[in-house]
Every structure is written in C-alpha cells, then in structure tokens.
Amino acid sequence: MFVLKWVYQFRGYLVAPPIIIALFCYHLETESHFVWPFGIALFLIGVALRVWAQQHLHYRLKVHKTLTITGPYLFVRNPIYLGNIFIFVGASILSELLWLTPVTLFYSLLVYSLVVRYEEAHLLNKYGEPYHEYMRKVPRWFPRSPYFKKLDLINEYLFQSVVAESHCFLLLLLCVLKEMAD
Image 1: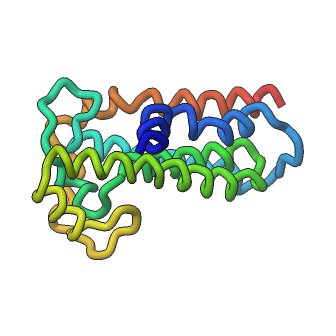
Image 2: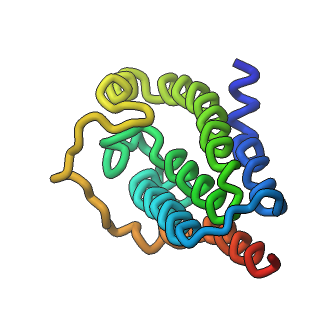
Image 3: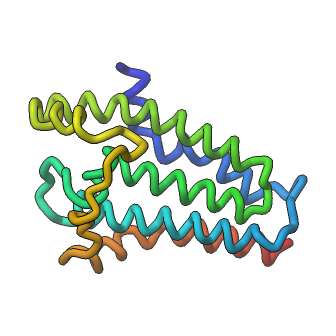
C-alpha cells in the first residue's frame, strides 16, 4: 500500500516524463497535415472532460466534497484521469513525435491504474457501502451503458470549473512554442 500511496501523491510528476520528452525532443518528428487538427481535437476533448467532471466533483472549487455520481461519473469512475490521458496523448501528437504517442498512452494508463487502486481503497474506506455500490454499477475506465438523458453537461459551476481547469492550456501553449521554435 505504501507504493500505491507514493504513486498517488506524486501522480502529477509521474505522468510527466513522456510529456517532457514530447516538448523537448525533435528527433524523428513527423510532419503531417493531420497532426495539429487531430492533436488539438484530442487535447480539447480532454479539457472538456475535465471541466465537465470538475462541475460535479468540485475538486479545486471551494465547495463541500461528497460522493460524486453525477455528470461524467455516471459513465466512468475516473473521468478526470481519462481527460488527462486525452490531453497527454493530444500533446504527444502535437509534438509531432508520433512514435511517442503509444508510449504516452500506455505509460499514463499504467500510472493512473496504480493511482486508482489507492484512490478506490481510500474512497471505499471514506464512503463505505455507497461507494462499493457505485463501484459495482460504474466501470473504472470504459463506459458500459450511457445515461444520455442525465448528461448534465452544464450546471452552476461551469465558469468556476473552466477557470479551475484553465491551467491545462499551458501544455498546449508549450506545444505551440515548440512548433514555433522548430
């Protein structure tokens, strides 16, 4: 459990190596017309997923935390981490290091899989049976059954959530600066 807690505490740093490589490596870049549109699309999907999740989770907002089972949490238990993976894969594509994209994807999945193991044990301890029931109903990563009538894409926390997640665009800015330096 010590290793999982350590991975959880340092998750922000542990997912960084592929992104650092993507931002500073120019070796074997792929110049293609699809790179920027596809990379930006994945990046924006990731940010949108994080904003949607933030509206319901209130992680960076000054709101009392409760067990969140609305919005994207109806579909998967870890939408913020999924959003991060989309952002990282998008940034990897934007770096034009297409060979790094599968590495980024699998590395992120590995780190977040370890993080989620710790986090789920913590939430099970904190919320007990309601969280256990939630775990039985909602998959960890891949949605099973859509609840399209309950999407709840926009609520009163939209603006605060966009502001709280705006830091994600710094990575996009770094990708643009790398492209300009090339």
